[in-house]
Amino acid sequence: MKTVMGIINLQEDNSLIRDLTARRAVESIPFAGRYRLIDFTLSSMVNSGISCVGVMLPDKPRSVLDHLRSGKDWDLARRHDGLFYLPAPQQEDMNRKGDLKNFYHNLDFFEHSSQRYVLLTSGSFVYNVDFSQLLRFHQNTNADITMVYNTATEEAHGKNVVIETAENGLVTDIAEKPAVYDGTQVSTNVYLMEKRIFVEMIRYTYEHGGQDFLIDGIIRRAAEYNIYGFEHDGYVAHVDSTAAYYKANMDILQPEVWEELFMGQHPIYTKVKDEVPVQYKETADVKNSLIANGCIVRGEVENSILFRGVNVAEGVKIKNSIIMQKCDIQEGSLIENVICDKNVIITKEKWLKGAANYPLIVTKNVVI
Image (cartoon, rainbow, N blue to C red; front, side, top):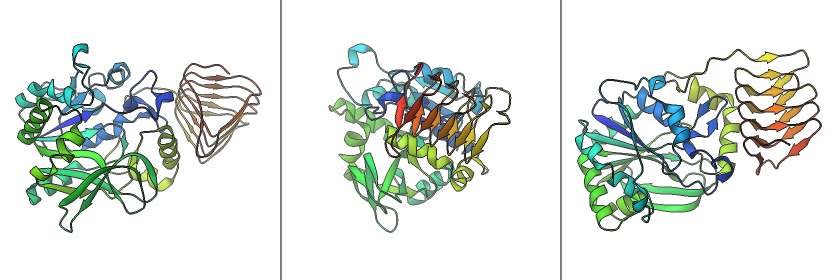
């Protein structure tokens, strides 16, 4: 995998998850108690042996830069290769929408790299993939482009890229659809190709008025390339909406999903923070929940995720909820089907309840 350069494209549509992305990029949203969404793609690359990773920065890059820093926690702080930040173009170029302008203005980085292949990914997917298997498949099929897909097991809504493949994996159709159903082959926004193909696609498509990499670079020019599909049959979640974020976190509470993502041979790395273990006081009652370090629990917590430093006072009942870092839930409060962003304070005797399929969101730094 030393011949592969990883690119993580952080230009995401956040229109369906704005409550959680007002001050951060989609990929830096906290997830599963101690991680950020970008950790899954970046860790999969590192575990696969990729040592050169470029991050296409979003319009709000501060949270991403603060989390990744030098890349040390992913063993990417290196003298040669390592982690690179690729900035968005200057303001005068913002009249053109889409992500192609970002790739085009960083073409010199791709052209001067020593790697032969480019692995282009998105940072908003939750999975644990061995990309070395993808490279072998790509080479054996002699494909121009290989797309990674997952077979849907239930209905999903949003901007889904659906593909159809022949028995040998050759892609026969690609399209964007607002909804998918059980058995549909859905792209995970992972593309592997030779660098020369990637550079030619970016330059030609952008200089001919294209704006979006997927639509203008691949779908509209699909007939020009030999495209194959590679199936990842493990767990995949695309966090492109508030409902998808809530569901993916609740999925983590299922033992089989947790074991697949975190307990296998390939760990998920994240920014290290040394904190004291959880303190469970005598009045605590915790069931099927994920509690991060630094929490103090005196109340009841059921089927929920608590991030670092959360304080749960006596008499509190938390159920089916996500409570982010350093929230303070005071005496007698009831929290059910709620997402609390960082540093939220719920004062005494407050009751907050959302719907099972439409959680209530309390935004960052709010006091209720």
